Length: 306
Image 1 (cartoon, rainbow, N blue to C red):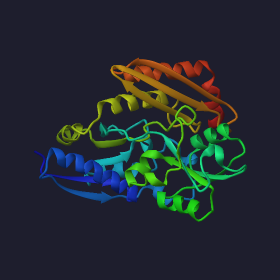
Image 2: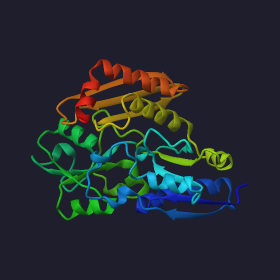
Image 3: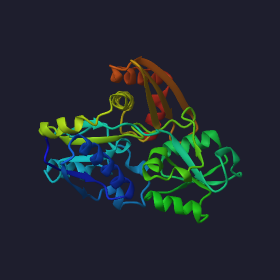
């Protein structure tokens, strides 16, 4: 059995909770495991005044962790999978994807559900994907750029600076703050980010021992779902700034994938779905991407890159 391991993570409260959760799963396999958690500051943690849409595809919450892995300072890195770029360095590999928590977005507000908010209510988010879908649902809302850790964003609501924020349900669940959630937003209107709700465990490609060890915490249905989502994103251009979202759901051997592509302005939005064999998830993702290209998705992606 493995004797010790060093886990790398971002230093936020949520990131540390996620790393501890993975460590707890590993200790279930190996109760005597000695472990240390190393906090690593990423570019995304430093440049909190820059909108996330300016960094799409750059892995701003990941690159420093990957460098520590490559340099041998840590044995594995725990990421929010939605933060991981589609392209992984050759020296590294995605060894496991954990059981997905609720992938939906949630609203946290002082004034009730999304349909109950007053005209012109101020809603905070740092995501262009969420912005587009919010304005499609309610065009009167005022969307305010907000970044920082969960505590900071929540305080903006509770202090009255914002009427509400939209955030990942999984983040609130992992923090034990479900009682603060006002509403779970329906996935058919608010398609989540690729990989949202799952954790990715990254290791060195050459480190077969660690890869084998962490593979025991891999959740197969989640792996299949996010493999389809990531293949969909990659087939559409991966790191582009156009709002792209997807959610895969596995039932038996069937995988259903919902996709969304919108123009950067949010004036046009496309939604489509595809079903296929859960044992070939990438094929499902690629087929859905081709369907959406036929619907005109590339026009929106080109517009966003202009």
